[in-house]
Image (cartoon, rainbow, N blue to C red; front, side, top):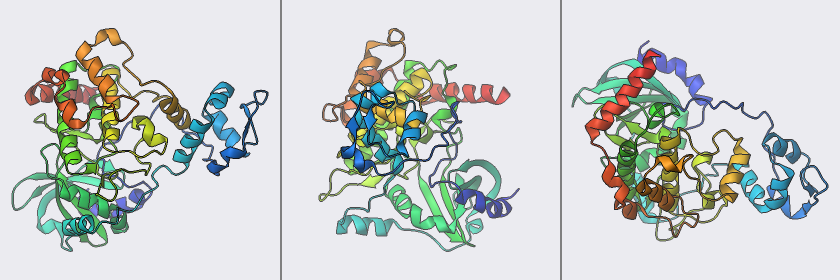
Length: 400
């Protein structure tokens, strides 16, 4: 099916999904998603009283909360000990993305305006060979294409034109960022009621595709991934931008072994007027504790998420990944920093790197620049060695 034909049939499917950039999606977890709807009225927590004799440890709970807490395996002991933490987690789950407008800073607004480059032209006049479907993103279908002018191979994502309003900030943010470790945005077309977004092609997919408990992800590979992510974060943070959704799904790989951050759906710019954020965004299992609490935060949330991504590489999945969402958020909120399942397998350098990324106090957490100087990164392999490692896993999995 060609892109012209396929794009038409994908519109209805795409509008049923939340916005985002990913070409490759994480495989479903083994637990079944909850059918219990999210409760509301979280600010009523001050009317709730502790009651050790009740089933959940409280009296005065809104009726709609009770099945939700039970479905998330929140025990009486957890409820009694973590009243405020549970309120934080319920608030986040009820409205996880709570988009905040950009800070009212004229310079930032002008910068975003200058980054707008949506063209009302036919993308087929600028790209050819758009007939191979290579994936399905959160808001559309992705095809492979080639630039008629430069010969560069690109990924072209086709979304309904109605997505444009939600994607404007994301597109502008990605257009403003130019770094070897960030996926490049090439073009954006609005044509025949469809949005066509041309991006740098990362032909080996995302990091998630080469992770698993059956994969021996050696430290030299972990160090190489971390080095590249930190280079991207150093650039973003230095330019007063946060990514806010670091995880393996958003770490993209190409066949040359290059690693780049993608998905700018949650990225935000900081200004002098507002140098910290409070909006709750990201993916729950990778969220920093201060973000779950609704506290102010800065680039340190990206460093925490990098630490969790390290645990993904080491153990095959992030901590609490098998837990229901509310319970996972509560455990992140109230538990000591996570670490690898078998510390004896790993070097002191890697364990210290993890510790620096996963400090509970964000002030004590390493910055991107500081972490770039960590001794662990000296173990990093070459791009060619990483490419061979990644492509070998992908080929073996395709044959299974």
